[in-house]
Image (tube, rainbow, N blue to C red):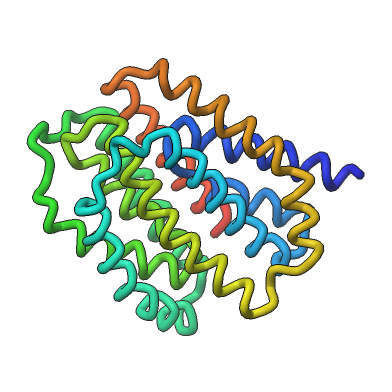
Length: 240
């Protein structure tokens, strides 16, 4: 019974984080759930959580969705996944965590303490950032950070940033969930944990979204940088 309780608490916290910032649920839930559950249960379970949270957020922000902004990211990611798998077989995961953690913390500190360009970067860069995301997805099941960095560099509204992230996550997440299902990783135990914690997932997502609605445009980017810094520091801690 204690295990189910902890799973529910972690799921609520992860869903709240993504409801507030638009990302972070998988990177937070994966290592925390790994404390209580077998990793072969955690990975497909977290994938189901990620798709569910993303779906709920897409419903809320549907009117802001522009597929042309997501398409280049997905094309790049599709090319990057096999590259990430290639490196996963040859590089130590701790080294990848160290590199990614340092990059995220450094970029977050820059974003928090220095003014970024108001014009944003060219949207053609989406292919490259999507490629990096695919590489990390194949290597670490964490395709989000490069795409988050890309959206934070744009002069978009907070709604457009958040919905672009969800559009990217829903497609990449559905591919992962499908792969887990056909490979037999999505077991009865996985579905049981998912069912027990689903209400907390929905509640956490909507509570996070409620506070998101209270955040102004400039404060939203600061929240993004703070969450990114936390995730980067967490990755460095995992690699130590």
